[in-house]
Length: 321
Image (tube, rainbow, N blue to C red):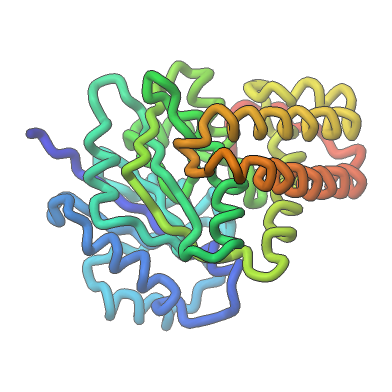
């Protein structure tokens, strides 16, 4: 069996979502989880991406604990710039993206790599919040269950905390760093689909995401998703997203219409893919209400972004900076 070399990219931007702590401690779980992979260790390269806001003493401590890790510097403190910098420094045939607050299962890389048959450009895994609390179970559905597979195995999307690309594919289609934090995965997925890429879903490639939704953290998370969603439409130069032309023509009215459409699509996905998602028939009404709530919060964020810059220039450049 011909094994592919893999570069795992771990960024440090997600530390912004938590109380300040030692960087080496924050990354310990994700780095150790990569070290425990069943995939041949000699074929795994682990890259940690830092930026100018990173204390060099902290970098030294990361290397002291994990001498095999490769440190790379991002040109800016931006989630997507960090992912791009890691991909550019990677030497593996596959580039696998993992957030610094995520811990993959031991067979994660094995499962992702197993799907890279000829013609496959990317493979998305299954992400859920860690733990079994009501909040973790609830928001695992609203935040991550948009990624499912159809009857052919094709993925409906991917999360940048659990996805593998052929390196040349990601280098040819870098993430757009004009987006502040949210929505870059949504845009890239549709850009790749428009370019004819084949993207599969592998539910056995599982990752546990840190709980950044404690308390009212879910409100902040979904508000920012809606806020950043306006930027996504503005940088979508190729208009690969269905809502881009509508947004550019009708502004806030389009955001309302798109939010309503997403609620309907959420409900249809819950009903059609409930077994994949992991919800029972009896809990469908509960999760349907949760989707309405989260989409309303996102709409509020989008309207706020539009109100702050109603005359912002629409960016039409097709290539990210």
